[in-house]
Amino acid sequence: MADRYLSFTGTAPGRFLTRRLGLPQPAALRRDALDGGLLHLTAGKTDLDLAPVLARTGLPRDEDGRPAAVVLDATGVRDVDALAEVHAALHPVVRSVAASGRVVVLGAPLDPADHHQAAAQQALEGFTRSLGKEIGRGRTVNLVRLTGAAPAESTLRFLLSPASAYVSGQLIEVGAAGGGADPDDWALPLAGRTALVTGAARGIG
Picture (cartoon, rainbow, N blue to C red):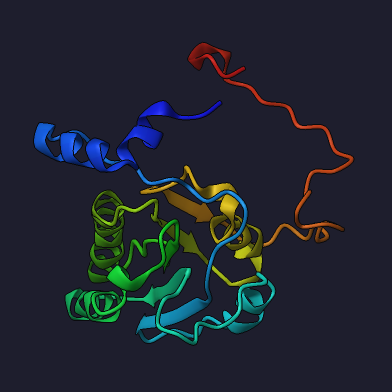
């Protein structure tokens, strides 16, 4: 079904009226494929080997300065000074991310023995939510806390795909690998399996 409001705001009279009335001007979300390459950034000192996992997402490396996706490895952010590196890394590129693009920030689990690290990593959550609210044009921003690159591959594949168009400002925590085999087809990871969804008290079961 066509979205009449979206269609109207795409016309000259619609843009004029929505600006005058202070109404939102939604972006058309791309659900086919991301348009552009992948930009990999780092803040803080990290030992995370992301290159093989990112290469398997199918997105080419960004070459023209208009990335469809940005992945910022902030797992090495352990104090306030390193938080400044997050801003320094993203600030020059965030506005150049293509419409309906993706920004994924990677963080580390909170270390209860290091309050500086815990505070810095906790700050990434607020940063991600704020950026997700401000970035606009159908672009999404999410935070993934992970212990290693390999266990997070399925999560990264999802967040860097058109399927995650409606997921933004979220914190996703990924544990250690459970030893399961990779799916035969990443586009249909649950093929041949049965999924049980519970939670009837909230109306989703």
